[in-house]
Length: 80
Image 1: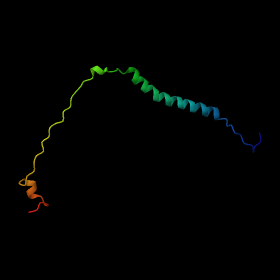
Image 2: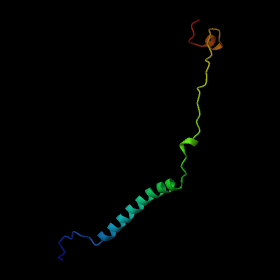
Image 3: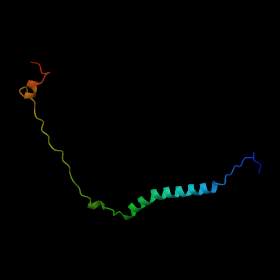
Image 4: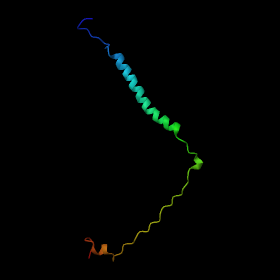
């Protein structure tokens, strides 16, 4: 090969390709194994054994503000 000629294939290509494949395999394995382990080892809850609750909104009473309250008498924006 002449010194000025160009070489399209580098000697590092097979090693780089193998590292890329190994990295992809490890990434896929990292994503799949936890999900598979959770799915395999978790115990399913039958729908009939789920507790049912009725939630009732609490009744809130709002205090009425009258003109004789301390806040209204001493508020700076209250007309005299």
